[in-house]
Structure formats: structure tokens, C-alpha cells
Image 1 (cartoon, rainbow, N blue to C red):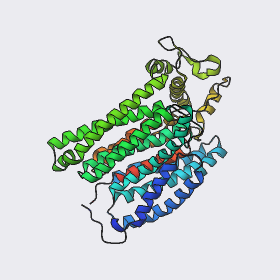
Image 2 (image 1 turned 30 degrees about the horizontal axis):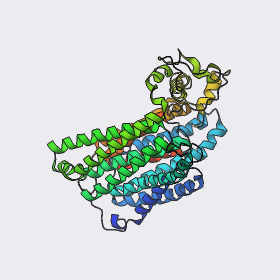
Image 3 (image 1 turned 60 degrees about the vertical axis):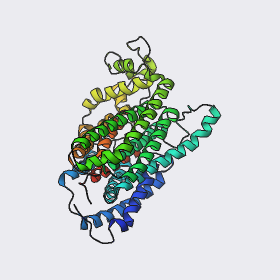
Length: 461
């Protein structure tokens, strides 16, 4: 076990570490909120300086982090090099690409540094990770403040509005909400596994509050099928991991038995409560959103892009009929058909990508189908968009960085194993079904991968 020497950087005196965590909490809370670009830039600049100082102080007294734990960070570094190389040698839109280099990619680089610094600060105080999720929860509290008068005016708790609420459209709300769900569920498992009752009580109550508010927002405020679906999947993974840990506690170590006896008992109660909350939210959304009823038939039709070429020009051809003889739901068809076309038709024709994050699908569709009258912007899948932007290599680097977090979580004894594993699964799913492939969504992705990579450092005292 590694012990920190008595110094000004010891955990109990580590003011700089606390400051980094506090500022990162604010940053996560406002990252997807409208009208906060100036504040985000200021926080990123300030935190980059603080993180640089903190990293220098940390590594002066801390043994080296294992080499394999640097893998996600090295892959992120390789992605930055690929982006720069692409601009100098493969660019088709140099002015737009240069603008993104000086904005989105610069902020993503700063976000990576901030993620590393914040992760190092959290290594010394694992329970402080809850501060990050409280920042996002605060933004949802303000969302409810906006929503309640709207619901009163409409005389309905179902009051979706994609323009006037604080987030950039509903997908930014889904981005923030899904990160909150991942963070809370993972932190609950990690805290309970340490076997201390009082911290587990607080995290369990925070998780119950956060997941309830997030699901309510996804159902009644955003009307977001992807948000509800992701929450259900993540909760199922949480339940499976929890049951697995209980089984290990019965047959394995004393430490795992502590998990079962203290935090485990409380977590069982919270899990049962969350199950009812999740089931209720799912039932309500199935009733309010007609897209669920025909989703399977719509999906089978949507992915058959050769048989149903309507996706090329929806304005002229309209939507096809599904296997039940009914018109497919537009939201489902557009997401799946465009994503399938982007991955199987456009990406093979552009293996190095366009080099720009904003609207690569629309540009390539206009090139491939110049007579189309439809206004096509996005495939609604960030991974497909990233592949269209920076080709197979860019997609490989980011996906490998993300999947390496899952591998490290399963092979490294860390205070944040469950959190890291859930982030590996959750971010993959979120960026698969969300049109979050540019600007703040890319910055958040780099921040979280860097943060979680550092959190997977082997357990300290």
C-alpha cells in the first residue's frame, strides 16, 4: 500500500485537488447548457493551469502509474496527432477544419489535461467523485424549475420542449442525463464495495434522487427514447454487477463479505426501489411515445437500405411501410437508415474521412446524391459521424481508447472499477444512438476518457 508523505500535498491539506474537483463539477454541470461557452472556456483555461501544477506535484511524490493504465491516454494523444496530420495532408475543407482545430479540438485537448488532473485529485479522496455528479444534478434541478411552470400552463406533466429549456436540444439533455446515471450507479457499486455504511447511505440516496430525476426528464421533458433505453440498459448492467459482487462476497474474501453485510444490504433496498422507478418510467414512456409499439418492425425495415431507398430523398419518396403494412416512424427510420448508409456506403468511399466534425454526412450525401431534395444533416450516431469525419483510423483510436477502459476495469484493482466499466459501456451506447459528434460532446468525451483512465490507477491507501 502506498502512503503519502507528510507535506502540503497530503490529502487533508490538498486545497488544489479540492479546487480541481469543484471546478470540474461546475464544468460538467454546464457543458451541455446553452449560453455557457464563455464560462466553459474560462474554466477550461483555468483548470488546465491548475491541472498542470497538480500533475507536477503529484508525480514528484507518487510512484509511477502502471504502463498499461496510460493506454487510453496514449490513444487520445494519437487521435490528436491524426487530426493535425489530416489537416496538413488530407484536408478537403481547410478553412473549416482549421476553425475546428482552434475551437473544438483545442478545447478537447484542454479537457483531456483537466480530466487527468481531476482524476489524480480523486485518487486521494475516492468519495469526492460524488461532487462531479452533483454538478450535473444541479443543472437538472434548474431544468425542473423551467419545466414546472410550463407543465402548469399545459395542465399536463408531459411537457416536452426542445428549444426553451436550458440544454442544446433534447440530445444534450440525454448526454448530461446519461453521464449522471453512469456516474451515480458506478459510484454506488464502488462505494458499497468498500464496506463503509455511512458513505454508502449518502451515495445510495443521491443515486435514488439522481436516477429518478433523470428518468422523469427523459420521459416527460425530453420525450427521448434513446435516453430511456440507455438508462434501462445501464440499470440492468448495474443489477448484474451487483448480483455478481454479492455472489463473490459469499464465496470469496472478507472484504467482499463486508460489501454484503453493510453496503450490500442497503444497496439491495435501493436497487429494489430503483427497479420500481425504472419500470414506472418505462411504462409511462411507452404510453406517451408511439415509436415503441412498432420499433422492431420499423428497425427491420430501416436497415434494409437497398430494398427501401427512401432514405436518399425522404421529401420526394416519403417513408416506406414496415412489415406490418404501416408507415415506419420517421424518427426510427431516419436514425437507422442514415446510420446504416453512412457506415456501409459513405464510409468505405471515404476511408480517411472529410476532416470536419460538423455535418460530414450531409456533405457526402450531397456528393453521392446531388438530385436529392432532402435536407440531411446527421446520421444521429456519433460513431458513424466520427468515422465520416476522420475515417477508420480516427474511429479505431477513439473506440479502442474507450474499450481499453473496460478491459482495465476488469483487470485492475482500483477504487473505481465499477464506475470505469459502466462508463466504457455507457459512453459507447450513448455515442451510438446520439447525434453528439461535434463541439461540446467531443470535449466531454475526451474529458471522461482521460478522467476514467487515471481513476483506474491501482488502489492507494
